[in-house]
Image (cartoon, rainbow, N blue to C red; front, side, top):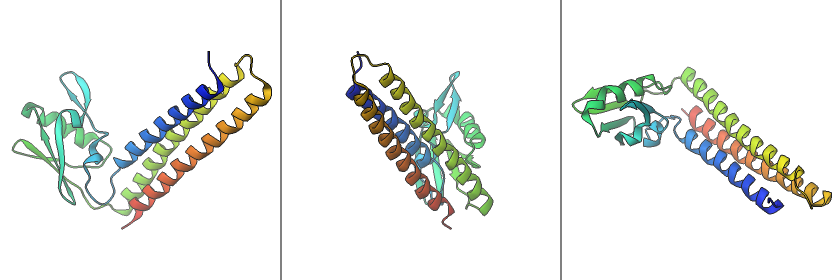
Length: 184
């Protein structure tokens, strides 16, 4: 049987997952300099299934504008190169021996604006996740038996405050990332 503290705890955990997912996705959005987390969202078709790039290759950033991808199975070089090229990151990888070099082009104004749109979309997905957690918790609160209306109303207020705090965190992340992208 659910209790108000349990419902609030579950809701917070769900909102935390949305926020963490958003942080992870936002860190993979490219700004001016190379970071290995940039390629975290790239998925590669290998062995008949789609796998995250970091499970089939090691990624390093030897220079500020270059990433290198070293496949663990040299037979997967083409698949990895194709996945990098087809990702929405605007990359143009080149294979050199058994290693894939991924030069990061300087961001032009148009690409910056595109990336800001992608960031806004990711932030909105996180907001939707947070709203979903709130409405799920609200539904559970309404279905509670043996609980006074006042307790439920207080819990709903707390839930709304929790929701607002998480939305504010997402907005702060968004502002920071947007500033990072637009910085020339």
